[in-house]
Image (cartoon, rainbow, N blue to C red; front, side):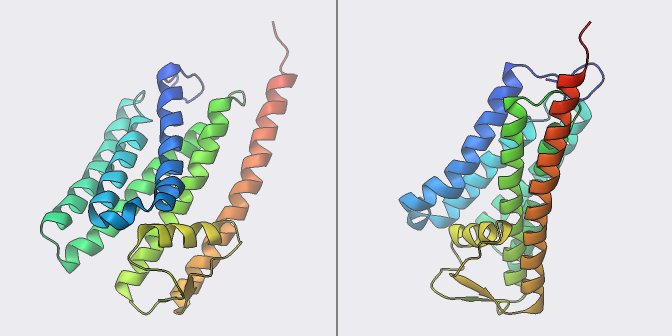
Length: 228
């Protein structure tokens, strides 16, 4: 998966498969399952299982680097342990810690994806898949941030037709902010809620601008490099 220098510049079929599967899970869990109404049948179990599988696959993307893999596995394991502990013995403290550790795990996985995307090397289909997966991961991460704000201050958001306990509601709101299209089902009320929304909108626009510029630069550098 990694070259001898430790960079994400060389890949094998395993890394391709892991990244493709991770992107497939993001699309499946974020868009397909909610449309099918899966989460409404057993919301707590659905959310925990889906989140756990997503984190495990995300941590596996660092398989080729021992230190990164250990770090990612540690962060992911803590998030999963706290989340399942809260499922078996729910308390307000565990609920808050579950949200915070979950956000930390998503940030860790997103960082791994971005390292791959912006590492030296030619622009390949896997790099593009990683860029898309990182973009979707940002949306899931911000959804966690909104959920945390709602836990700490139940009046931070006002539902206008959406169920704030549904995972899909926060995900839809997050991607509405990330793409600057907006989402009518939830209205920010508290100043922190407005700030989070503005921060995500800026993040989404900067990501696309930096991503396109970086990939174009890498592609031009690759094509202009003389071959021996």
